[in-house]
Length: 584
Image (tube, rainbow, N blue to C red; front, side, top):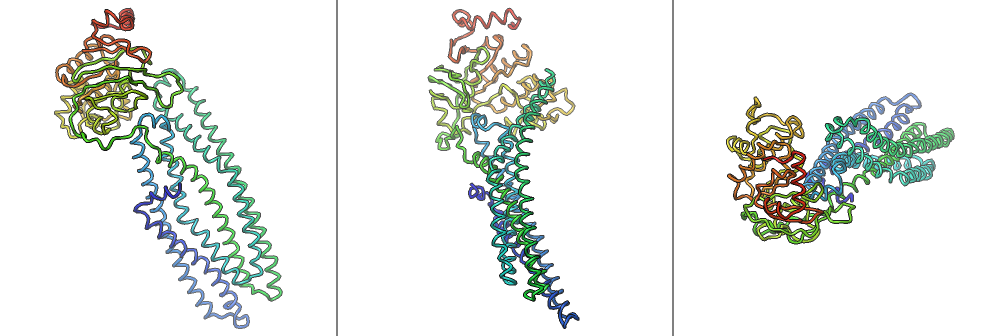
């Protein structure tokens, strides 16, 4: 896993090489200083029979200043290169994750959940980025300090250095035991972060619904539960990690006391010079601190492993819908004929035993206006989602112009399909930038013509800034009907061969809807239009009406034909007449 992640170092590889080299240089400079200090004290201060060797002290002092300056220079550039390496790694990894997510089908996004994908692209990558920095600095610095300090200690006094053979294994054993009992908590903690993000995201997206139903208290409790779960898991991990500090300090202090005890006796017996003991103690601290640093990096690597597993799970996921990049007809025009051949469909993550669509077959001629009606939950949206391959049929086949949709490249297929989804989405920016999603190079004249066709021009012309009017996130500063008309204009600008309108006129009045429908007949007569609607008034003028019940095609025909023979259609018609829902 880490080998795969390191592949995203990319063009920042040189910084991953230079930073550790400079860290080694910084460590060596830092470790030479105690040795030079010991020489200065023993041979300089204690030289000339205790009177002090001033020239020697000046010489050693000068050498120490040069070594310290080199160490500082190495440290500054090591930090600089380490930052570039880790930040570059994080940049490449986030870029790769986002690009991967763009290949996901709706089913893939449902599998991971939006909140989890956000956490993996942000929090998890940040943890891996922090670990990358530690790898280039602390993980190199700690062994450097340990090895060089041990070298000097064994060189100064072999007998006294035997203490390390007991202290270091003991310290490592403590760290490994704590890591063993903590590692799984980090994976649980990242999942709890997913849940917390999901609670926040859902609340903010649906804040108007929450407030209209006065459900703030319920949402607070839901958030509190997610927050409490994260806090409890974090506390458990922190408590286990907190054991490391006193345990390592106990070993550290015990080792230091042993060095003072045995070293003091050696100085008193003339077996060791006082300057050597001073240097030895400094190296002891460096050795034990390096082991502690290594243990902290190990804990970071433990959490990084949990984050890395989640990130690579996304990177290695095979999208449920495979793009046919070998589509030989890529770029060829599409007329818009649609055929469903014994299609059944079930959502991949659904626990439902039955199919959402069951053995659905019908044909839509190119250029026709076809409506799809049925009660809520009968699979109308699921049906139209199969045409642009937002999902793939569980069984059976969907054809466009006689070619299986699986055999098209996704770009080729979706380029010729315009879609206004059930949940209308506008992006932060201007009205112009939102409309240009349908035609990036369209000029203002073309944009305004499309707004006239979608009956959006009237309200846009009332805005002081016209097409330059700012749309806030999610289009919260325009009404539902205005949002729908902007989305219809955006789809029209695409000039598609197939236009799918998924209940996209539910928020506009009947008169406005009639004008939009008239535009379809007059200006888009060569476009295959599929209209999903609830109101009979919206569909009664369609060339064909498909009636869905229990996920199957109950009947298909014109309004008059269905009124004569289709019980389900008659019941929908009658219920809307009684409720005043039928216009005209």
